[in-house]
Image (cartoon, rainbow, N blue to C red; front, side, top):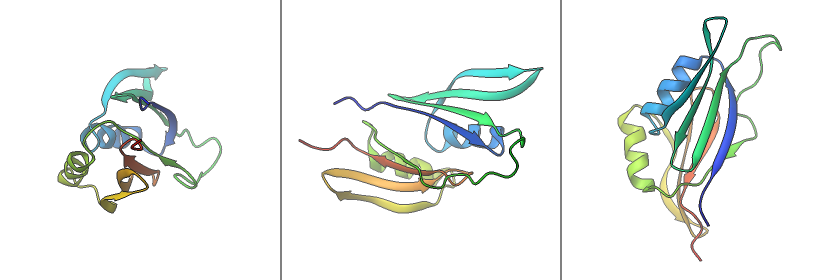
Length: 123
């Protein structure tokens, strides 16, 4: 199985989230999306994962971020990704550990979105 994830997240501060996904998790900017001369969204990718970060415009009031979602799976070295995240100031919710045939760790992005970075399940 090849890991692939595509997610769209509405964030409070687009530039803060862009920097976090780039520096902490190693995502690269694929495309910046502007409207009216203002940056409104950024497409990012890392391996088989793609994330679209879009700026919350406040039109729907204060929205809870990160509740009830956990994004996961990578083909990368989980321990190296955890070390990279910590080196860039991220606090892990859990250290890398083996469970259910995967190696995984957990952390939250600046908006509280829960991310589980895990290897694929072993056959």
